[in-house]
Length: 285
Image 1 (cartoon, rainbow, N blue to C red):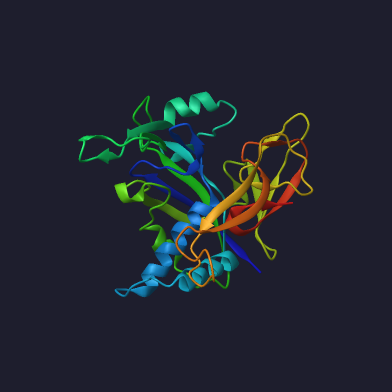
Image 2: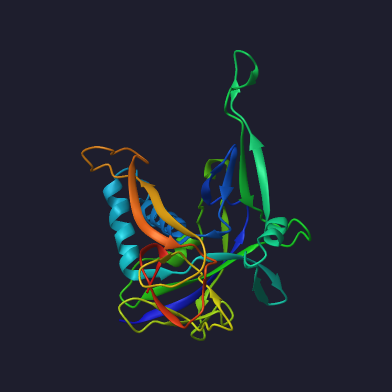
């Protein structure tokens, strides 16, 4: 099989929230777009485009398109970047998490209302973190940079779908709106300005990190802990899915899918490693 690599750049047109759990009243956001969030947005857009003017209410159609994406499309995680002249500078959240948060993160506070009393509803105060569409210090536009791998047998018009993508949380309020800026073939095997290299000649795309003890490298996606020696945070990946064909837990968000235990992006490795890009952009050694 042959995988063509595309560098994909979006401009963030509204606030972006990628859920990362709660701390008190604060709904935290991840500092990057996960592969699962991108897969979900592409699955939704492609399924609804295929339905045309008709309804898209059968979860089996979403499942079919989602599985087709798994087979024919791979992707990296996407990271915030700014633009200088004609190049994009990725603002890695590591190692200075505080600097990234000061430049790119904001929050929005809201509460539910109790109308008879004309007051805030008890227990409904919440605050939602987001990646801002413009940097908070200099007001520059924020872009999202990543890579998509297309199998030579792919018939999915994912580029067209990328022109109408909205992803993440709070979409009903207009959050997560993206403008496609670029989806061109990558001219070399280098990814993210030589942070990694890719090989698209196997059954799945392979990403290589050229790390050493004197020059460790960051993992750029969630990575299965099996056969990987790394230093960093470990977390389980759990997601809610809609499976209307289940005999139970068949309504939206009721089915809970466990995806395994992973090293989180930003963990470090100190030796050269190759990773297969699996479903949802997850790396596997």
